[in-house]
Length: 254
Image (cartoon, rainbow, N blue to C red):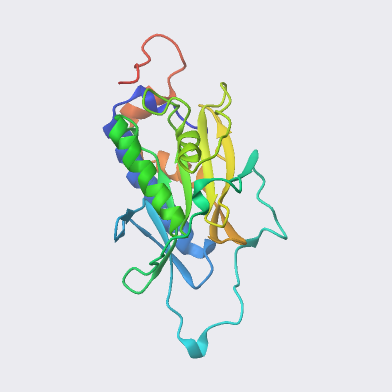
């Protein structure tokens, strides 16, 4: 199922799809994708972190705690197959020390999945708020996967990854002009690492790594869950989104 051109429709249409996609991702993660000592929840509030999908770790009694982590893929055995990998330079500001508080109702947040919505990018302060959340999560040791199916716009002219990397005190490249949609997986290690893929409208979504710890990740089934979500999209909007490019395409609101 190729990615659709979501700027053709109002934000409310994508919001409906967004909610279903979150549920599909949650179900996929809880149906054997995550190791048995992890689980996923949608829209769980934890202090100031509100992710579309949170990966949490169950508290394990001391007497039954395993000697080593199990499940998922390891970097040493299976490095993520992505277009680009970046590591913050040793001079970046993200290396500052910080006090971390990492428990929410007794269950530690391990990672966040954020599917970018038009509302995250329609105003400068909304972009700032979104970047604040991602930066705060990373400095607290929480890994993040961002799925941005909207091209750079007025308030993120170089894309959200470039804006985030700039905040963290480093430089990076803009998305390719022909592939402006960005998938970015961040490993909250020291220094922070980013694994990047770029797609365009009509592309198939690749599986992206979602880190559970700095050396272990699972592959997030973006394509399969996108397709499952699309199957229930109202026919009236399916026709608009599947229409070939040409006259009648809606302009993106600024």
